[in-house]
Image 1: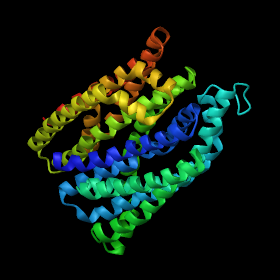
Image 2 (image 1 turned 30 degrees about the vertical axis):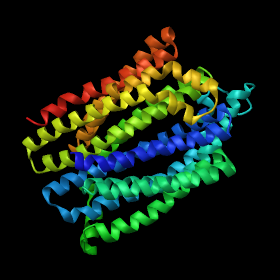
Image 3 (image 1 turned 135 degrees about the vertical axis):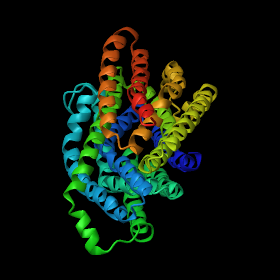
Image 4 (image 1 turned 45 degrees about the horizontal axis):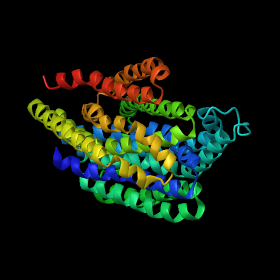
Length: 433
């Protein structure tokens, strides 16, 4: 479990570190409102493109189970199908996102239009739209990279997946620092798009021609016309798509309600959510390890191996969560001061830092259990669990927000993460019986 998890953990950590670098650039070259605007623009991008996260998750689950069965002939078609979906989906979402982004972000900040009398809200909207439109140009490459990464993880090539993510985020960081200082928020968005396309071109060629087991053209063509395989993939992906959309919408709701408290609270929450992102990608390393090893064990019908993997994964995940909470407790304030020099934003964030300290322990089990469900190809349970969790979040917000304000917002968020664990745990136990 550790051998499979640590490369994914390091590669995952590079994603929020990049976000922290982008935030630090904006926090030092832009206004406090720009921090919140980039948070909103990032959320909209994530909503449109991370909703296609099934391309990574579904590919990993199918590949790992096929590998457990020893079915190497299906590896190339299992990669080609999500790559095709990613290319077409990326083109469609670029078009729709470019048209809809001004209206969605305007609604998020509570403004009626771009010419709203509220200048702060109008400024948030305009900066967020500029950032989003620059970043969205890399959309098709983002989705195809999901499929490529999922294939590598499913094949157990954790170190290759690590190098793919590190090369992507290193390139993104360099371009963000360069273009961000030259062009501000727009430059940061464009840097993200360019790095995605370069990474897709390099790793797509490498995986297809060097790593993927060869398959005669006639057999490949026949596999790509297999209607049953396409229906199975679409059914799996639909469940994962609904689940991911609900997850991102829940985070979007958190951002939207933060915006209603004003630009200062929105910016403070954006900083704290970066800490949440940091822990999420760290703990997701164990989820990626679980996806591979659970898929292999269940594909080979090795129930004892599955139970051992589940135990080891939970122990490692909770141990890592405890370490992260301790780090946030001892150094959270220093991290916030590295991200921005605006004392008003730092002071606001420090008021809610205790929730970020508690978050790793409350969130850790659901990350691992997500990996278990993906490895088991139990996408239906993931979807139903997320529906229940989202309803629980809305109820908690309705009850707690009027009483406790932004503290109630964070309290509701932690309850949401706990409910996610509760809904998935029974099936994870049942799979080992």
